[in-house]
Length: 377
Ligand SMILES: Cc1cc2nc3c(=O)[nH]c(=O)nc-3n(C[C@H](O)[C@H](O)[C@H](O)COP(=O)(O)O)c2cc1C
View 1: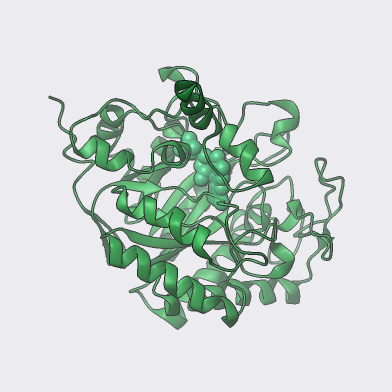
View 2 (view 1 turned 180 degrees about the horizontal axis):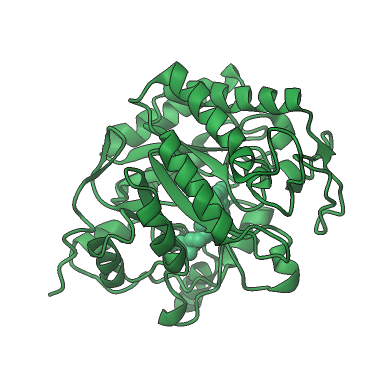
């Protein structure tokens, strides 16, 4: 029988030990109570994941400010009224399992379509899917946002989260800074690669100064925009190097923005995977970034379904962790299944029915539900 030895060997992110190499990639649950509070629907969803054997669970994107939300049912932690709910969530996960819990924090930036707040971005480049032009941020406003990311991280620490992940991918605010497509600034936050990375470096230092080394700071990093004139790996690999030198304890490379879909319906971050050749689609990216980020851990996401090939990726040191989103929507207990010796690939067919569902209500696998209905009839 094939052994999945490395997949089930503990590994650290900063000072935090994760029991295995399986990460639940951030997944918008669409299950918070109205205005972003943790309620029973969120608790039930995370309980299933915690009991399913995942080593590190990353929450769905959680807002640092009301102006940066994408839905009233998205988690928030932008003020202290959210702390009791998050404390309950963290307590439940830690009490039910030995899984670690990270919070992903976000501002939707250029892609925000809030009825009350205009979208914001480093530069006022019109967004073609929303039809809105974001307001260009002043330097003072950028530092205000840096403070908000820091303050949300402090609240997360107070709630007992094991670490934080900044969402700097998928065309949201932080990724807008690292992309030449959305950042045309000529001041300290634009122009050179160092300036484009500055907001991420600032957030890191301000948060680290407050919370110290025991609370790892990690990042989901945009590596490719997949639009003409957008960010490419040549630049993003240099940004990853800067972030690792700064001290980010883990980097999860990803890519794609809303506008990528306009020219290619099957693009990042959620590619439809039709064959084994389509799997592990950020592996070529990881191979470029991993040697550059030295002490930082690389979390590989994107179309990972086969535990044998995941084991190989880990053995070959192309990544330190593998990260799953859609497969865990279908099978929240997938890590336990693999650990028990049933090493058949994830049942998820990466069809994106969950992604379509997530836009209208609580996320679940529509394909799985249809299959179950058929069986019953
Ligand atoms: C329903 C759904 C919700 C998602 N929500 C988030 C999110 O909140 N934050 C994030 O960084 N990525 C989000 N993603 C992207 C995933 O984290 C992941 O990068 C992508 O699905 C590729 O991984 P997979 O092939 O294992 O699904 C979401 C994807 C799906 C399908």
